[in-house]
Image (cartoon, helix red, strand yellow):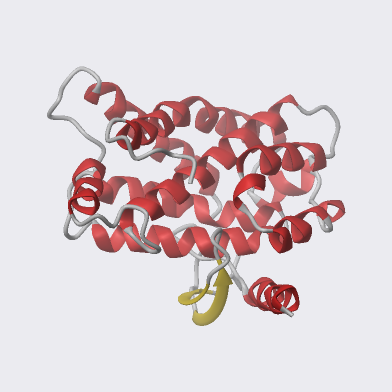
Length: 257
């Protein structure tokens, strides 16, 4: 019975999920249920995606993460430099629509991701840097608590890492199919963190993955320009992802949870 209930929750979340974030225009608030990586269903406000994706979404993502990479580089040489919560959450908000563009079955990841980005946007009103935000959770012993800013940061980082690997695999892929690229990225980043129902939903829908040509068309890019912008994200993101890992590892908080 528990398994049936989980499937119903997942189905409801998948069927009611739409795009959300700064990459979408003409937003319309809606409510829906979402099962996150911990298998907990929550309700959150977000926006529908009746309108098209921002025509320069991929360009905004590339620029935003280049800027964050520059901050990370500066922070390595100056202890007073650090990634700010506001800048980080803003950059992450551009990424949200990409999950849904991969396919209908990835929208549950998008919903979970958007909820966590919204939390960090709210947190930016109280904390300037990612470090200070995590330190507060350490102080209150709530780092691993469901819904904590630190936990949400780690989950967002996981989503960014998925897109980094996905873009990398797409850039290596010959031909028009990106099914293997999506499968490899999902398996490496999310497989161990998702329950049976979520893994099943993804594997059973892989044949509905859009082609490379369709994906670039949805992103309003030709393949040539799209590849350049994907490579820009692939190049810029690793330093930021390692920076986030180091926040957790330097405080002996771990990252595989």
